[in-house]
Image (cartoon, rainbow, N blue to C red; front, top):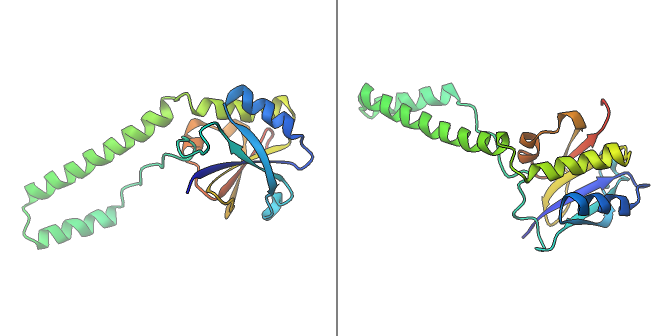
Length: 183
């Protein structure tokens, strides 16, 4: 199975306008494959984003999930179990310190990728800006999936709110609809 990126635009948009932007900012192109078929944007044109490598498995879109917030209740239960096993307070403290170091490493990796502005997010932001602002397209959707487009959820996002962090943390099977104006 290959990861696929789908792009959606209003049905009346000429795909040549979309492909001009894609060739300008990415080495990809869009191929029409039907309509979204679900929800408020069900009549939008659904395009599969293609590239010379044949799949999008290496895309950074949706590749990083934010570290989970520590659940204090779960930590308290774990500490109680360790005490029940006879662990000393010093040993429990070392275990908690190691757990925090691990969490800090995950956060550094996440925020290093999204905060460092890797060059991969910028073309997608530039493409969205090109299509929404310069081309005047009302809205553009992005959907990540595995071979079959299956939008289970939908999020409407103003273009001003698009950040590398948002693009890197996109969820699969969620249609992200970007608009240039206020929602």
